[in-house]
Image (cartoon, rainbow, N blue to C red):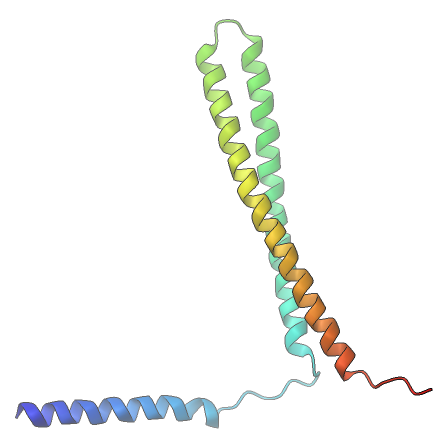
Length: 132
């Protein structure tokens, strides 16, 4: 009884694996109308991501400015040692976050540049050569 159950399970698994391999071949994606449509979509997605990262960077930058003002304000008061410590700690955290976001922004800018370059290369391939 155990052997037949194992054989049935193996056959079922093989059938499912072959069915999943055959499905993508039969349901082929339609070819895009433009030859470089895929690259164009990638460029648009990368630019949208860059906008989001830039917004986060701007918020981090504002946080650092706010923390600097808080430190300056706390240092102006003579009896506020605890507030100065807190403000300086908040400033350090804000600066670390800004550095982290700045790296992410730079990486995304590079991704946008690479995808734009790939799109330009694709369009250059597809463009007919100029006849003299």
